[in-house]
Length: 412
Ligand code: FA5
Ligand code: MG
Image (tube, rainbow, N blue to C red; front, top):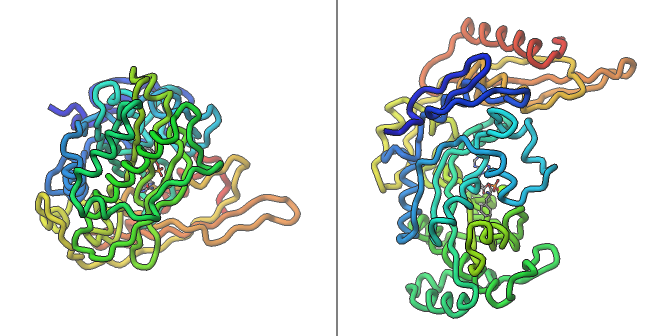
């Protein structure tokens, strides 16, 4: 039985998720709307696009151990400290991350489980729901899904082992390594001092080779799929890259990856190994492969969405008619610690998925009083029914009250 299916509970002092109870404190900022999402487990529903993509990707890493039932509740040590995040890294901010209390949070990425699973195996995949406080529009949602992958090699024989692995791959696979993929070590994206250059370059080759293979398999219908690698920075890999694919004329970031920090492998009890890791966003790929226009659709409980798909099959989403939107503005004088994510959080709490889009449409500072004013335009729309003006007026009224109560701002 999956403990995460039990509805979470919030009392004045505690939060219960997945059968475990945590004490609240002054850091607590997780809301009931967000906690409800932990029960959905979209990546475990075989006919859901998120699970279909998860399974297709996993099939390109056949002998990897795949974990997909970890609780989203992790410690700040697992999500940040173990991964070499600096004490003042912005990702730790309460404006960006959901905390149950000072030490306990909802994971912001699947990397939170790297250390734990590297102790158990040299070839691992982790798929899970991840949580980030964010803005509101068609491509942002506070919950999305990631797949993490990692592979470790014996540092002493990595060069030869990888050469043999790549040589044994299919010719299509070797063709996937193009000259542009050849890794250059630069001061901005450096090799770790503890690594032998040849071993590190072999690991980087194998990483790009494996991910090229994965993406080409996923897009096998797309004859001239364009893929590029760009330099990136993560606290837990060096050097690091992001893979981008060309989609509708724009470069779309699909994943982050790199050569794992040796500290992590050492802490996992594997000092003699060297390895790579990647983390990819399943929604990003699902939006493209299934042609799904709005990220909220993944959370739809409407049969017109859920009944469209079959396990292991990529098929284009057939859109059902869009209902008309209802647009409302709200303006207020901000306080010095005002943060847009806090405002969006209240919108999500009050309106749920009916809030389609929130845009800052006006902003000014009063010349005399120096008071700062903002005006947000909220686009309300349901994906499965008509919303009434009466209903939206009630929501908007509730929002106006909550904004004053929770952010101590002054309405205009
Ligand atoms: C990470 O989360 C790193 N943990 C990835 C990683 C793992 C790097 C292992 C190195 C080694 P990032 O925040 O860029 O990185 O997110 C990774 C991917 O998740 C992105 O490339 C994107 O595909 C997806 N993603 C990020 N933010 C969102 C979002 N708001 N909505 C949907 N997908 C997102
Ligand atoms: Mg990124």
